[in-house]
Length: 362
Image 1 (tube, helix red, strand yellow):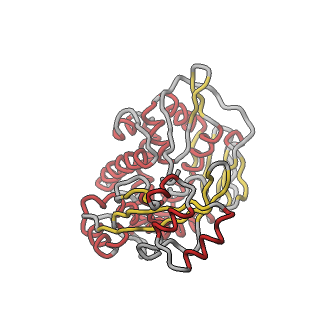
Image 2: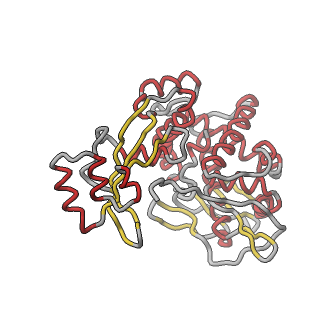
Image 3: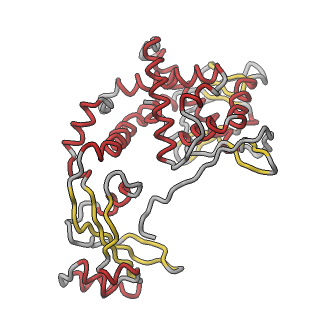
């Protein structure tokens, strides 16, 4: 699926330059180009269509425009993000066509349309965005050339992922099998916390070594108000937006024990030690854990897919109009860097982006 391939949208990896035939070319990858007029039409579509803007910004996890003075403009960062996304899509599509010798069939393109709509909906949910309209309507709002390119890129990405030995196809049977194989990862977690001041950390560690219970440690040392009740902080099922971070914080520490090494947290204007313990783990039915299971499979797939993506894009010859940025070497490889140029304003847009907190501890 295309989102698996595009999890690192803002770190497009490639090498080299491909000469422009003229100023009418906005971006080019191995000789395949997007014209200036086509890219401008795509950027204008983000401004003119709040639903499209919201869904695609969710997918890219980057706001394509911002409100100001009664109208919206496509931000410089938004232009760069979209140019990077277009470069990546073209490179993957070319690889599938030339190296894997595969061209999406009509049936694959239809399936890719449904797949892309599903991923737009999922991206909006994951970024807590209430986008106007449906993903299908957002695709319909794209210029025809843009829509065709996105659907073909989606189909090529799906095919590429299907050819990787280490990926798991998102079929109903595979999702259920993954859940059954990793049951403990989807337990509903009830946790207790202790927020410990730096000056009390040594005493906390000594008491912990003496065998004090989670509740006793929290009551004695925690600065958080939950300390009065033994640190009890709540229960988190897989459907909770905080489940992934809680699961990660609990780690492999046995139930009923704080870990030896704490996390850190900003509290009362200072940095405190944060200890998180699972006090109970309850199996969660598949129907209530399915969404997280799918996310975990996608994360697993993305690791393998991104390795292949890096190989594809490092070998790509990329060029772009300087108005959209400059090609350079970043911490994650070559990518398009934001230019120091003003953007053009356009019609009003009402799309909004919000980001939910990923930590439940404050």
